[in-house]
Image (cartoon, rainbow, N blue to C red; front, side, top):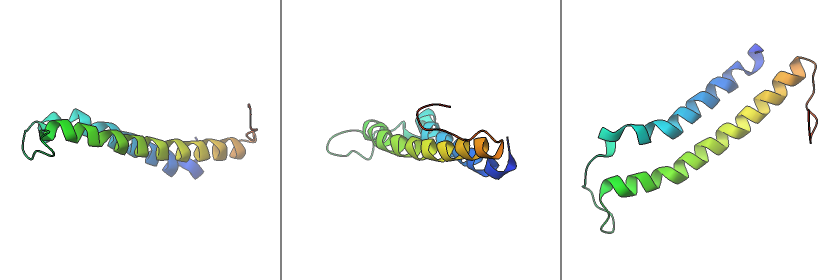
Length: 84
C-alpha cells in the first residue's frame, strides 16, 4: 500500500471501529434511566446508534473509494468508471 493514502486507510478503520464499537460496549448502555418518551435508555440508545453508524460507514466508504483510486493511480493502474 503506497504511503500517500496510508492515513486515509487508517481513517477508514477508525470510522468503522467507531461505528461498531458502541453497540458492543453493553455496560455503557445496560440501564433503564434516563427514559425518553417512555422508552428505557437501552432501547433508544440502540436506535440512536443506527443513523450514527450509517453516517460513519458512509463517510468511511467515500474515504476508502478515494484512497483506492489514489492507490491505483500511484501504481499506474488508473480507475475507470464501470470497471477496472
